[in-house]
Image 1 (cartoon, rainbow, N blue to C red):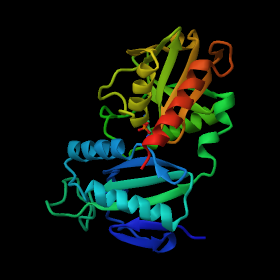
Image 2 (cartoon, rainbow, N blue to C red):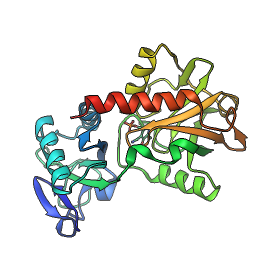
Image 3 (cartoon, rainbow, N blue to C red):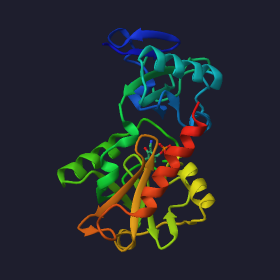
Image 4 (cartoon, rainbow, N blue to C red):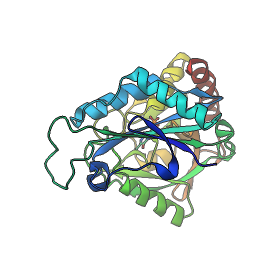
Length: 286
Ligand code: PMP
């Protein structure tokens, strides 16, 4: 069955949906996006994603295309029309179609382009990988300096993902000035004793919505949280490691480059945090 997708206010079969060849998103990667997970038909942390979307748009001076309420209604409509129980809703907003190619931004009043589509992923929360953990390899972080803005410039993370695959790993951890920034599409953590360590927020990393929730739940569960950068060496010697994102939730990492982390098996802290995250965020789902 062809998916129904959303383009600029219209719901269309995916093979009839169109965006201009002059769209700034296509020509210049001039756009931002969000991915919200769906579990049991509920949107997880929708409001957090909307707050970050607005911040990304404002940092790039792209006008806000719709209200949160309209955006929520469109998410729900797509979930219903595509009969999604578990999966994702992808939302992209670009600076729109100026009708030609030019480095200068188009005149004010040029409407942003809004595209949304669903991805069905039955059993998303029961990913078998959560029981065995991911392996990661380290790569240099060659991205631009505003990784806190969730832009669609995903070429380098894609290249890093391909390098990870070529090296037999599940993902890559990017390293800058000797310290881990984040995974290709997730935030990175290590665990030492009762302390969870993850890089502090700055322009260097995406401010993960899952990260914010997990750190809040960790503090509520009396775990210590230290927000600071760490090296690959320190991570290899940690008791546990894991990553977080809207689509992988909390995913244990059991190997970094050529070293097993801790026992080399999925550890209790990552397991517990995954359980808490899924349980608590489902309760708050809309
Ligand atoms: N860092 C990067 C580079 C990402 O692409 C993502 C996921 N989009 C994340 C972190 C995790 O963010 P979130 O928890 O909001 O999905």
